[in-house]
Image (cartoon, rainbow, N blue to C red; front, side, top):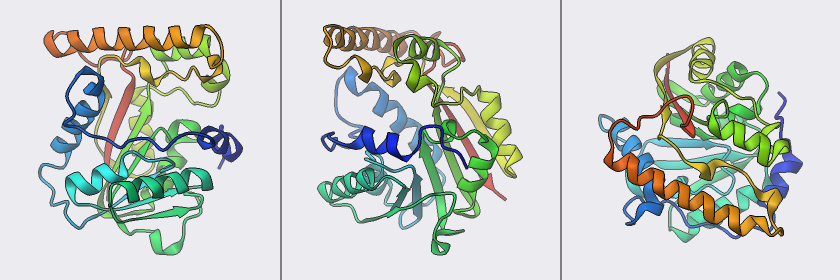
Length: 263
């Protein structure tokens, strides 16, 4: 199955980058607004589920800041799969840094080890499904890892609104390795994959941090663009916290979150 980005692209992305800090949902300040909102989302999602000791798999886990979070916050036994050796190595380092036990498998999720099929209570991906031409086939591949009754959480960027428009202008090659999807497109892909759709919604009002402007690095404009992006983000998040009319929507929201169950 075609990944529009391809393994060489991802190896280049992860090469030469420092290993990031992981998610700290309780860190103060507006700069932590997005992790805090994701933390709220996951706490609500798992509120009626006994997560301790359950098995969670992140598909596309390269350089994952999330696996240590799920292990520490919810007590999941965490696993990851990705086909970038460099990205997998960085994920292992992040788990070690946070003293979280986990297993990282370097491989293609379309051809997983037999031991991983039907083995997980929760499968999650951040920014994977939108790189595959056939979205429903991609989701169906995700679901193969799930036990019956297991939950699939699919997060993708919303590239049909403001962020997509800006991404096309600022870094067209990055835009071109994505399949822009609406909320309804993503929901339909999960249903076509034979899953029971629970919810599929736009997430957050706005966040320009999803824009990839790495092509500007080394230019005079890059530091200015980063500062401007941060200023806009913080300003929007102040309003988002204080003015309830600023709701997630198809035009300005940076993400779509889909939740489904394997029958």
